[in-house]
Length: 151
Ligand code: ADP
Image (tube, rainbow, N blue to C red):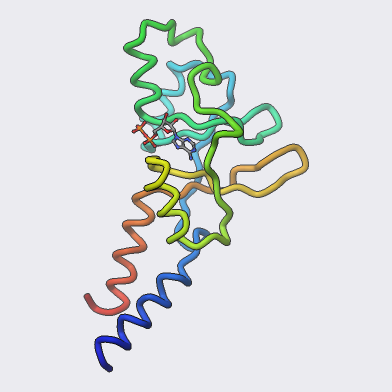
């Protein structure tokens, strides 16, 4: 095989990589959870981003590490303030479907300067969170692509 053919087939492989093949289990918290409990949850679940849902289990917002750090140094009463006060909220959440290409999602991460996107599905009452795709998943896909070519 020529280098050109390998490059072409790698490019084809990249376009075929879908979110659904690389996504992780989402970690979600209810919008009424306290900031304090959300911080505990982030450590317990060992994730960098929590997705926030309403009482119908539909996507309401996102909490990053820095969102939680900011509020913890900002003098708010972490035991009393619910996460829906400090989260980034809908409709400003960048989300994706399991059928989206990984490359498309990677571009959204770079353009929006975010580390993770919820993978969602339209439900009766709103968007249901079915997965999580992070920069770590993208890095894993990058490595997997290399391994396919013994690189
Ligand atoms: P950190 O804030 O820890 O650096 P991020 O870079 O992921 O983590 O988040 C930056 C900001 O963007 C945070 O305020 C966060 O709430 C928000 N954010 C994170 N993920 C998303 C997303 N998928 N859609 C919209 N906003 C997001």
